[in-house]
Length: 235
Image 1 (cartoon, rainbow, N blue to C red):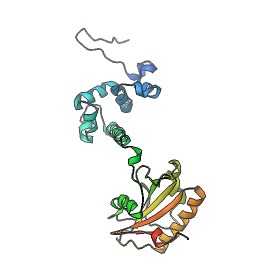
Image 2 (cartoon, one colour):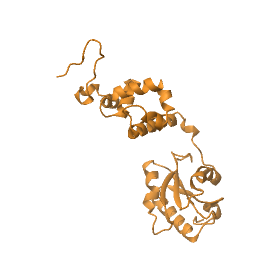
Image 3 (cartoon, one colour):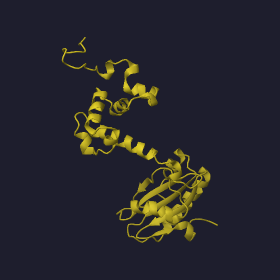
Image 4 (tube, helix red, strand yellow):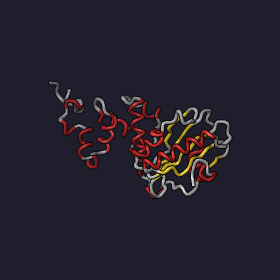
């Protein structure tokens, strides 16, 4: 067995994770008691692979703190030896999740009108060269749950859209309602007969799934609320 010291002048060499006792491995410590882990251990669990704690130490030394690490971009992270694009993306995702968790739930967007939903969705959908279908997930107080979800892109018609896909994320998130939106690449937001048919199908499915369809927006240079127009929404 190799000694832990090469000579008196060298620091101890940490054995690979696979040689560490299970209780000392970062991934185990995080699953057992994440609140008791040091920042280095949390970073090491994200990094994974051989000698993750050594890489975590290098990261903190390079960027000074977790706050400095959170400001680092992909090029900054991958410049650190042993940090490839996959690990860098994992770190950036985890730090972004941490930032989003700092936003109180009460500060989530609340949809009080079709214009509120259009303001969130239009930047995502205008100027697209194909039709895209997005959904907003809402709780019982019409607050938005997470980011708008892309469900489909291509020609919007009832023969191609699977209703289950439109409601899939809503059911996973236990959403009380959804708002559906799609764009017209022509820029003209006038709903087509196919749009009306799709809306009717989604409303009927929502009734069966106990997840209401509050509106269907058609977005172009302007936007149209099909609920306000009474298109696809019965009395």
